[in-house]
Image 1 (spheres, rainbow, N blue to C red):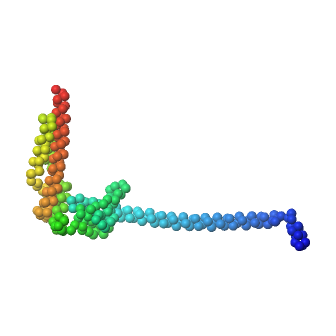
Image 2: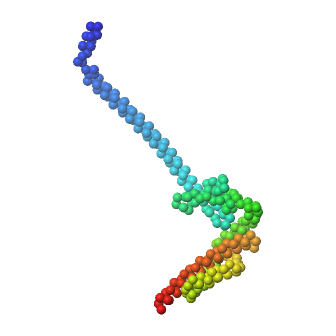
Image 3: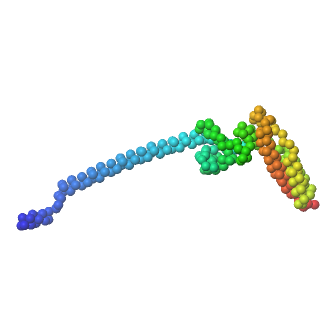
Amino acid sequence: MRLRLRNRASLKGRPLLDGNDFYYALNLSLSLNLNLSLNLLILIFAIMKHLACIFSLLVFSFCAYSQTVATNPDTVLMNNGKVIVAQVVDTLGGDITVIDLHTRKHKKVELSKEGVFSIRFGSTGKEELFYVYDTLVGNDFTVDDARKFIAGEQDAERGYHAVGVSVGAFVVGFASGAAIGSIFAFGPPFLYDGIMTYPAIHVRHKSVRNMKIADSDPYLYGYYLTASRKRMLRSFLWSGVGLVSGLIANQILLNNQ
């Protein structure tokens, strides 16, 4: 017991570490911290390198995909002859989901399958038909006749303008508004619009893309439906414009008298 007390007593007042030991411990601590920092930096650099590679791969894949979609978009042919150039996303269910490539945000659009005739995929060039010949649901044309019908719609939409009907509608509307200048001025334009639904519509051969089908009944029927709709809309539009112009002219003449 006395020996232990003496040893403790002899240690009392003596520093635990002398100068050499202190500097050795400090250098050891700094070396360990430096090695730890270097290992941490190496690890961070390796992680950043892998992340950069992954990000570059994603960017490259996205650019390649966007380029493929832009150069080879899908074409949706509607039963009314309208053609929609888009990216088809989903064809399952009752609707077809497409991405409109003409919008800035590439909005998704839902198309009813009942109104879609076919889709031609730009990546493969293959066409998938959605039109089904079924008289019970109103699809009275076969697939070939439906193609002719749609071709007639497209040719009429592109080549039939009803210029003569539009000019006549404007003249009748303007004359009626300028001469009558009251609520009764609406009578002649509406009468003209009604009469213009009866004259026959002739196919303009300059607008026909395939003369081999120009004499077929499905083509003529599709052409007639689209052309008559355009003629009626143009007649109502220009008769209304002429009527308003005539009423304004009538009021100007009355104010100047």
